[in-house]
Image 1 (tube, one colour):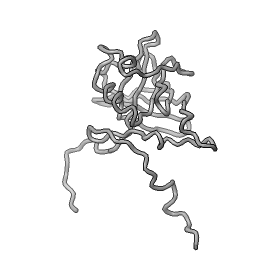
Image 2 (image 1 turned 30 degrees about the vertical axis):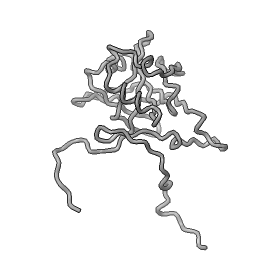
Image 3 (image 1 turned 180 degrees about the vertical axis):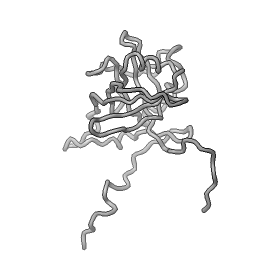
Length: 190
């Protein structure tokens, strides 16, 4: 097996692909598909999303300082793609995709009822980095669908078949391979 050289670029795949809900605070709500997202810090809980300044949702986030990251699933793949290629300047994506708005509890942005996890965020800072600007945000609330709780109240996101994005394609996940630390766990002798 050999390796070939590519030009410098983003080859960190697969990525979570999320639907980010935004609002101007006056009822003009939008959804944008984002793959440039991730965990920044555990304590305090922080995340980031990166958005091109020319996107319609960019100004809504910049003005309101709030957004909600909604995790996507196999059942939301069509809406995820649609919200990434159609502009909210032209279309009400919530209505077109028949998604249900639920008011946020700590932000003036609705979250998607059909999403298994919705993460309310308040922007802490904006880093203007080039093609994308990164919004660093504090997590102020998390909403989880109780359909994915077991009898011990343990959350099982894998049952929702979360989406990932890789080189322009969507994939569902969910196959269990091991838990954190299994590679060094002591084996039971039979």
